[in-house]
Length: 428
Ligand code: GLA
Image (cartoon, rainbow, N blue to C red; front, side, top):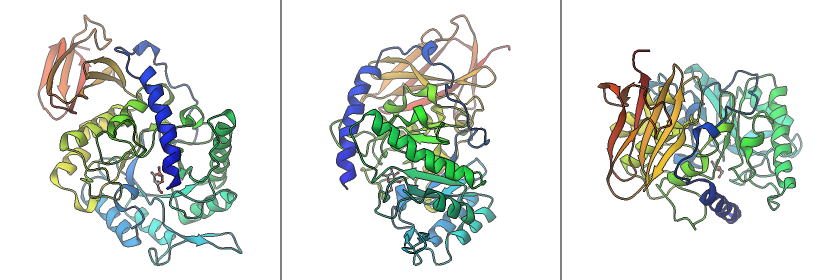
């Protein structure tokens, strides 16, 4: 797709920017102010949205049976019980747009019972239903976009019982990154944001502009509840830095790293969907990741308060994939009501420490080895920008033991491994 050339240029610019801002040895926690934009008052997305999206595994090969079976599996696997609720059909569900009425319609071969019946089925399982459109004339998959039809499409989605709209940015004029370019994106997203509000139905609005026009600055203003911070994350740890999009898990981490101040209850930075469990079998290829790398994606997405949108075939998850996605302790960190995005407090020789303040005066700490050799790491409270005299009870995620009155955290880390700990003030 032409889109990839465009993304390539922007990705390079982004990487250059990161080189300057992203890798200081120590990023000052004190410089991470509270969330600066005002929350939407609609009560949606007060904690990071959780769900499943069809794109990573199925791409254009979706149909109502697959979506029904997915909803069934979300319930039977226990994913619903741990909080996964939105079932989102991504691109290429469309049949077309009626040339007389202007009404969008679904592909009747893929969805013979219609989208409303599918949404009803998903709702009957106690889940929520999401759909996809685009702010341009066409979607990224060359289906009809909503440009010029925003009110009509929003009303249609609401009448179908849609609870979530992912709104992409393909086929929008791509001017150089100037104020006009930003303004056009803001205007287009606002038109749909207003159209969704006008339906009177609570619809979570997921902005998918990929990051070049800094949607974290204006996402809430246009009614958004989450906004992509980077291009599509493929099923790969890292892409060569001069390659085009999509990107790998590592780049996505680096892009979101310094954007924490823009994320919080009601509006979240979105580093894209989870590739956990794809094992190079999905529509989004990349070569696959190791179990360690998939675990690190979950760890870091939870540290970031990132939306958790599963991308694998949940009807066929193996034991490892289940254990990663159903990890209640990690999900509790992701869903912590404080809604703070974790930030990097320490970085040296490829070893990093990340800190996420939690409610109840606790902290989640991730120790992370981004390098290619196994290493050991030890950090004290000072390095974590905590009161150095404080004593914490330390519990590692996945380990029932609690180390009382600790003053350091130590971990052996394989390449690309991360380990997450929760610190609770001793004797509080
Ligand atoms: C863009 C988005 C993806 C997916 C595809 C669908 O690339 O970033 O997440 O929605 O479009 O065509």
